[in-house]
Amino acid sequence: MNEKPLISVVVPLYNEEGNVKELHRRILEACQKLQKSFEIIFVDDGSKDGTVADCEGLSPLVLIKFRKNFGQTAAFDAGIKQAKGEILITMDGDLQNDPADIRLLLEKMEEGFDVVSGWRFHRKDTFSK
Image (cartoon, rainbow, N blue to C red; front, side, top):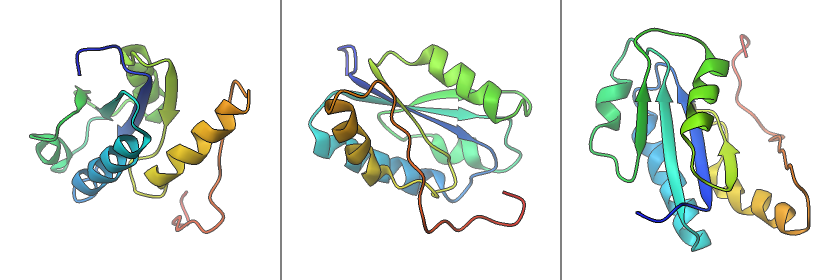
């Protein structure tokens, strides 16, 4: 992908070993169905597990690695600064956000909205979230 992407998908990660490959697969599948140029940016926020190792070999992928945990806001900031797309999509790394919904967000943008946000009705959050 040498061209400037239309869509940048930015995902902060913290201790998401076991989720990363499936998340990347789902994002890739959703973006390929759109038939628009895209990039996937994962920001590892100082994970202490095998998150970074799980990212190795995933393509396409821009991987930003923090040496320690700076928090989700800092991870989003780093990913957004790296993003080259005209349209920015952010999502969590814990598979709570369904990448298939990217299409729905883009459909709303095509209606003329500058900003689109979504919230899933049936979430599986833990008590701490």
